[in-house]
Length: 191
Image 1 (spheres, rainbow, N blue to C red):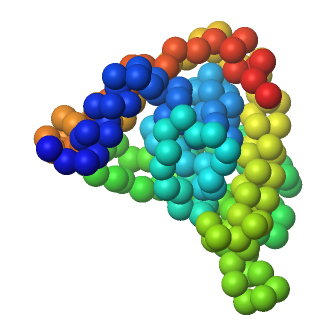
Image 2: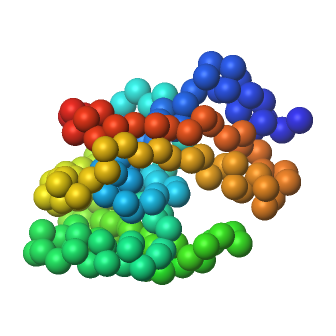
């Protein structure tokens, strides 16, 4: 039995939910996107944060994966049709990708690494500034998503993609969590 499998089983015994697996800094963002009809599959806040329920590593960049369909493209064009995301290293990048035998996905990433005055990178995990751009982007993304709240569904749910991966890859180490069901009210009341 692998170490990952032991950790996963321990987490499941404590009934860690899919909601708790989502990085706290982007939990509201993920909820808003799904209420609006952008079906997210994977996400990473791109920074370490205080008191995570599930400890994990983070690439030094915000990443959100969305199912690519006609509705997603139309919504993403509306989402970025503003000047808010076009500043310095805070620019979001949208790209189309196909990963691990799944349907095509749109990957939102940002911010891009920013050179620091000392020649290093401001958003490497060892930088004291790693969280700054990412926190600003998350806030701007949430504010922009909220402009569409009249179009939000009253409720939505998220399915753990580890269940999908387990059907594709029989030795996938992470056991899936229970679906996260939430309401528009739940998400709008989040800080």
